[in-house]
Image (tube, rainbow, N blue to C red; front, side):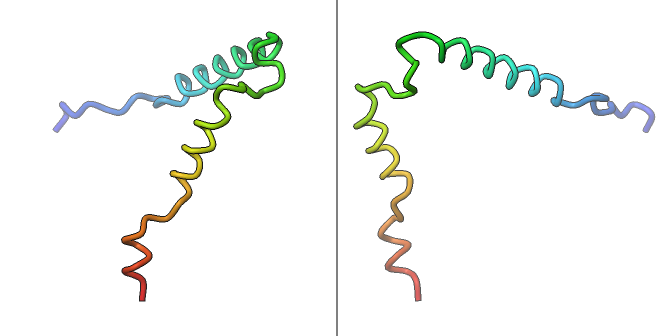
Amino acid sequence: MNNKKHLPMYGVGPIYGFVIIAVTVVAVFAGQKPFFQNGVIEWLKIPSAVIGVLQTSEPMHSVACKT
């Protein structure tokens, strides 16, 4: 029973924190570029709206099964 491997002392927290901070830094720098400055990419407006509607709509089979 002494052969059990222990979990890492810090877990995934440091890696997760580093990735989140790195993504935030990249996003801040990208926000300074003219392409991303307004936060809206015109050619993605319609596809984003369609994806949003599909994600928020309730499937019809679950509506029919409710009592």
